[in-house]
Length: 261
Image (cartoon, helix red, strand yellow):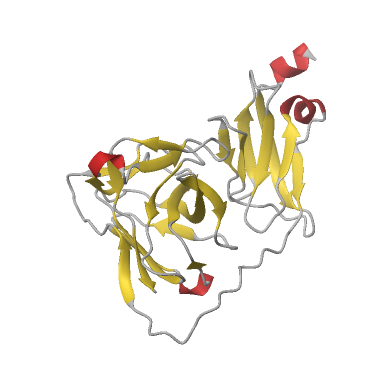
């Protein structure tokens, strides 16, 4: 067994749809609770190093599919080079809306500061950062996500936008039932993403996060930020797909949402 682990420190595999047998791009893969993980590429492939994690658990997850978890020792012993994820149907909860007059407004922070910034300092796959967005009235309908980029990228960048419920001040359960991809083009200085097709309603404060999901020639991306009084708007981040969430620093990301409430 020792020789197996020594030779399997660097592991390559592929993740596929169990029904169609087609590769699944941008699947989250990671050691649960640890900062070790990655995301599959556009062809469903991935590489990971499992050295020292034989007693831990590896998890594969993606919106629209049932997650799978394995003890790393068993995963390596079985040489699971291909993982098949079963499609699942996740219904958005039904929202009861009274005949009230809806207002439109901006939630979050709309700063476009060029001097105060924060974001991705590296291109580590699965790295996710974001901020808590406070609502004004329940339910609230999310219409558009906005953020200013302080240094326009020289190469294309691919991100995934995720919305979560909150539990004890940290992200908990995903709010959407579809992947929301964000393609940032060379020279782009702002992200304006239409959310209406995703039909997302929230009834409490929530977390908006951007996740780095594809490597390119770029090595990071920075957004406008603001200094947060007493850290109340601190950035919340996790280093990889299945790592624990942590509050980082005293600055807040200037993520904002055009919403109706």
